[in-house]
Image (cartoon, rainbow, N blue to C red; front, top):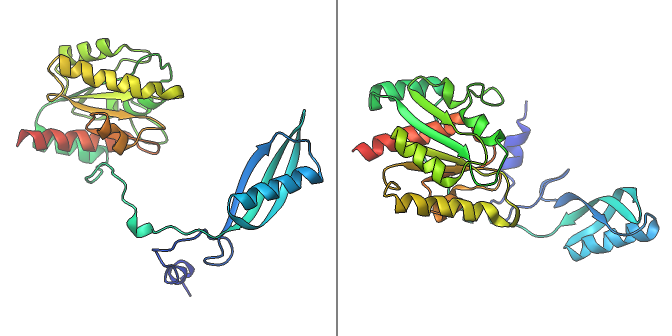
Length: 256
């Protein structure tokens, strides 16, 4: 039996990667958008003209829907002629192996030999706790248990709309090893301002170098987190084990 994926892989020039539809390097791409024009042939033509200006060859409207009051939704196919040099892409990310819950518990027992204290909150005016709950609460998310389930980790979830001052005070009170900050609301970059203020507050209190500082959210990357003065940033598709693995290994690293 021929391995289709392996065969296809050998035909790819990783310095000139193109979208793939039915045939390798055909450049086929699908996109959807809405235009503030009434549905009809003119609307479809407008969508194709716009797709051409975006750089797509042979664009075609395969679906359109009248949204009412002068708006039309489109699904458009076309051939992209641009390529990307995949080998030149470098994305800063949290380094190190990810341990599962049981491996984290064993790591604590063998290397730290005490409870690890972690304090987390959704800070500022942000009232969305889905992110911090997924990481800390015992039930976790999508089959990944939260930090409260980990033996050897004492996790404190302060909830939503927690002022930075309150979060830092609690971390100092508990002699926390790490602080986790979740930021879901990002309109007008309010998360940048809030995250920056937290770092400045910790520096003013003289605890920034003593406490491992992590942040997470849909628009958070490791690169952004480091730029703002954090030790690590966790974006979408990360779970408690990713956060725990980083914090635990960082604790041991700092002990040496």
